[in-house]
Length: 395
Image (cartoon, rainbow, N blue to C red; front, side):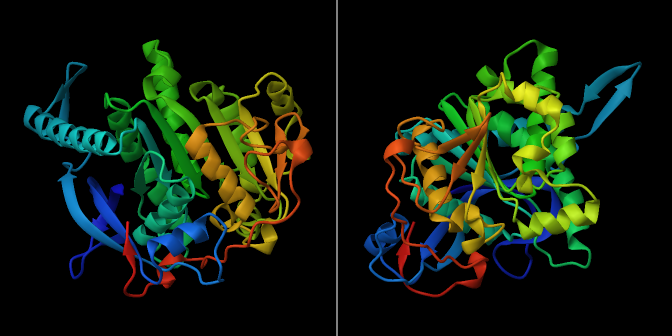
């Protein structure tokens, strides 16, 4: 898989740490399934495993393709005119060209024009993010070219939630640059963005700025960035802020569809809501939307709020990869781009833009004809980096 990160490079061992880097690094990461072969892994991901053994992973950085110059690049302002440093700009553009050439080669090698960009949440190591993306991509039949965007978090510092919130803000510019580079790559036909928890705050901040920038330039964000689907699982965003910064800005016009998975019983978001004194978007109930937002969604059908009925049986916050129904729904969306209610995604419609999913969900079955027998419950570890071993298959 490909990665982009603005984490610091470790000095004593291979890999990335939890501190910030002003320079983006771009390269390949290999994921090894260490305790089972390819056939058993594929059976597990499809829900047809014959045992309860769960996969264990290890990540290896195989090569760093390019390291960008650190930002901000030097510039001056003279008589109200912005003057960029030519040598710094040339080096930065050269790094961007290397990024695009490598991405183009990956797309050609995989005979696809689709890119899946994943941005992880709070307190994830680089490896955690890579393992999560690998599971989503594998569940989707390895459709498209997966890219991990990993921001600096996971240091277990005192008051880490607050410091990592600032590190998320630190990464917004680098994420915007990544989105610009991907969208400017001619071989890219479609971009799907998937994010979890606090990653949703970083992603929506970056995309909102790009939307405003596109409007100012008089161009269509939908046409420019080609983001067909934005998926947010358990978004750690203030509900009221979401309504004023996203709904009020007509954020949804920039995308083919937006899917948001919600669990009112999310304990992590419940704690965040208690800390900040306001409910979080990812734990919202339908009745918590403002009347103004509900009025908007009467006419905006491309935004879908998906209530996860039994998330607490698997993981209240990390259900996006632990809950068999949610994982299956994300997988079919990554693979096909289907909307809720389409034949491929037989979700139960509740009201307005609200839909419902539970562990009995089967992709490809309409609401009226769905089987009620549950998929085998997958029992991934809460933190994939805790489950490393040796021997197995490579991906």
